[in-house]
Figure 1: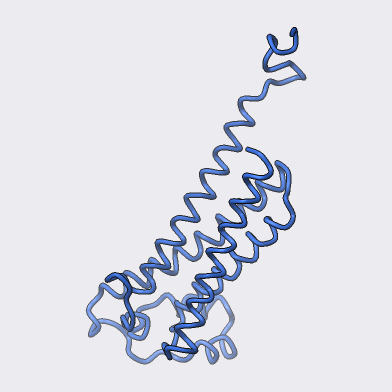
Figure 2 (figure 1 turned 180 degrees about the horizontal axis):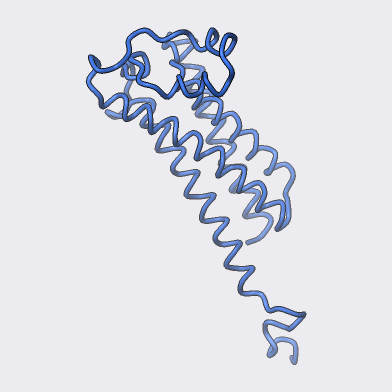
Length: 183
């Protein structure tokens, strides 16, 4: 795994995350869609993921730094995957089974501890189950889920590749290709 390859992967992930953030702000401020609390949690993880990938693309780390950045990207993408998956499940539930009255996210964060607010966000809420916009017959949380799963798979493959290449190196200063040394 070369430095240019990892930099380009981080830059592509940063670009995709920035475009997804731009699309979410476009849908909120231009189209007029109001994000629910789970959408805001997904946007938070998307911001975190985009920031991590942007920093990694600019930094150009070596082996230990790559493992750190890919691990952080995996953490952020798994958090976004969890929030998107929960919202997709809520959209599949019948609306009459869901709680229709949920406080605004700003109110919950100001009046409750952040962990309680997060737990309440993942509870059954009718405003998170509403499908207000689709593209190619997929809702916004489904697109978000696809994006986060893709980044999770990329980060996992990169981490596994780094672990595999570390296992292939010889121990104790031995030469891995003795024929090349003799030439």
